[in-house]
Image (tube, rainbow, N blue to C red; front, side, top):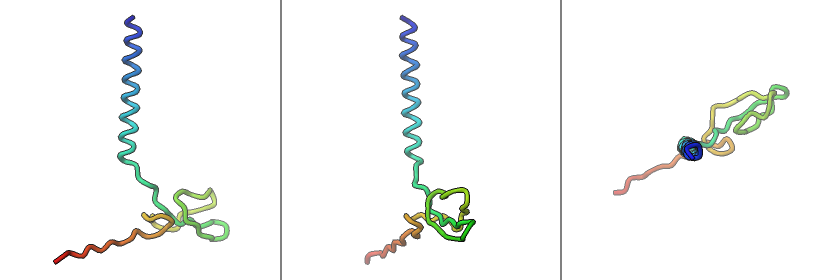
Length: 80
């Protein structure tokens, strides 16, 4: 009977660790930035979050907005 109790405790520890890992991963999750990628063959540019392949090199700084669009600027006007 002690083997069954130890097995149950090990299962609970494993499940607790899994829940903790998933919770902390979700807290730090963020969307990947967008980049322009330039073809090493013909110089064509493509906007993507990850490299299109081995024949491509990064050609820009990261963009926060979707599809290589700059982040929108929000103006806050104080009320009188």
